Amino acid sequence: LFSSVTYVFNLDKFVSLQDTLVYAQDQYESGSPAGLRVVTLNSRDSRPIADAEVVISIQKKGTPHPEVLYKGKASLRGSPDIKFDMPDYPPGEYELLIRTDSLYGHDRIIRPIKLKRSSKLLLSTDKPLYQPGQDIHVRALALKSMDSTPVQEQELAFEIEDPKGNKVFKRKVRTSRVGVAAVTFTLANEINLGEYTVRAVTPEFS
Image 1: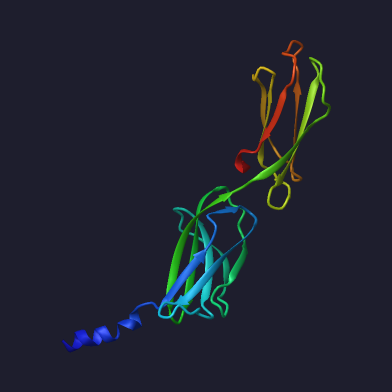
Image 2: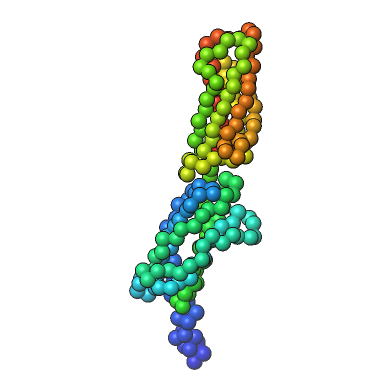
């Protein structure tokens, strides 16, 4: 009986008195600046815990090796706005691992996120009108939507459709270091006359 009563009175020593709240997006741009907010509170009185250690990591779902993105301490308010650079990982599903440690306890939170890539394309041809048998020179400039830096060495698909919606040309090429890709398409001598549609698609960034 004495042993049981002693255990109950000392239970606080084994129970974490720290609560951790995480405010984060569920989607981030790969290879771009990112951030989130972590709040550490005393679970007894909901007061902020100062100087709590905060570690943010990312890992691909199902893999055992996370990459540390941030290490630091909570502010006096217990709620630092954490800034870090998101790795330039391929688009897909990942996990953010948030670990907080203080004299009041320890928390480990896993937040599923998606990394995406988005781009803006400037598409141009060498002239607006063509005759049968002529070459169409098509050029595209691909820039990241977040910071307008070049989309380097990524696959880009060019497509051309005739006025009846028939796809008469399709070719995949890779952008250069400055985000440029180009192709040439030769029109047949006998073709459907009218407006042709030229399209460029970056599958990984769509």
